Length: 197
Image 1 (cartoon, one colour):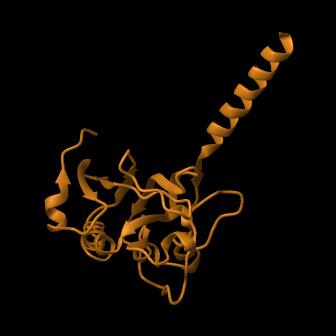
Image 2 (image 1 turned 90 degrees about the horizontal axis):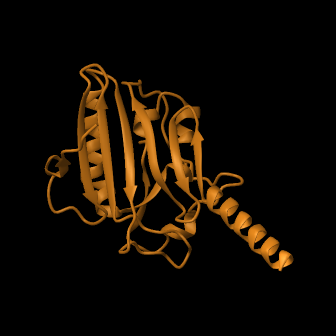
């Protein structure tokens, strides 16, 4: 009986330890991310947009995996409608090559509908760079997963919704935008939602 009880306790401990390791939190000079190794997608990512100069070009730069962390990879983005969507935009961190390279980590990459990524999401990123000419911004991107989230055969799970919480640091205002992860049917301005902060 003692051996059975000990076996149950050890199994429970191992299970809890593995669960704790499913989400990892990483901070670098560009962003802070909570990343789900189980979903192989970021859950939440925060960065600052501060009117950096554009000094370098992305050229042929591509995303890379991080050693010791289970992330999505190139296979998850082949032959489907999903782009490798930057959460912290490459254009916002083109002030130096080190910052730009950080934006190409798969920790900063979401399975994003190609039309949303290249359309309304990109346009909101451009607007952020206009806003940061006036004051610094802190931006938190939240990825929502639910019962309707698709798990790809390659292992990664597709978020159903992406929410940007934009904090205007000097005026202490918030603007939030919620996008279904699908082809947009309205302009980015009409995705604005009210959230308490």
